[in-house]
Image (cartoon, rainbow, N blue to C red; front, side):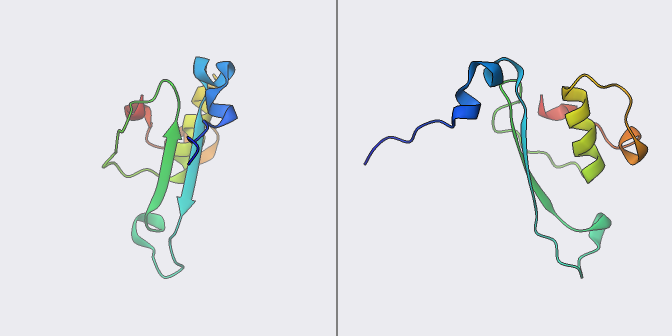
Length: 91
């Protein structure tokens, strides 16, 4: 069996400098309205992220938008992202 090859994006020098990849999976059903819609799994891949970190905090989708905008250097956040919890614990 051949060894697994690293993803071209993640292994690129540009990504290794300061890249951020956020993968979000929302498995909530329409009947699940707990905390605004149930559990959402998110995977944060970055050379700056804490390896293996798992959060117990409650975040909303607006927190993901805020995180992405912060990564782009944008300091003004639209609508609910302006008051959404910061996801800085992952870094």
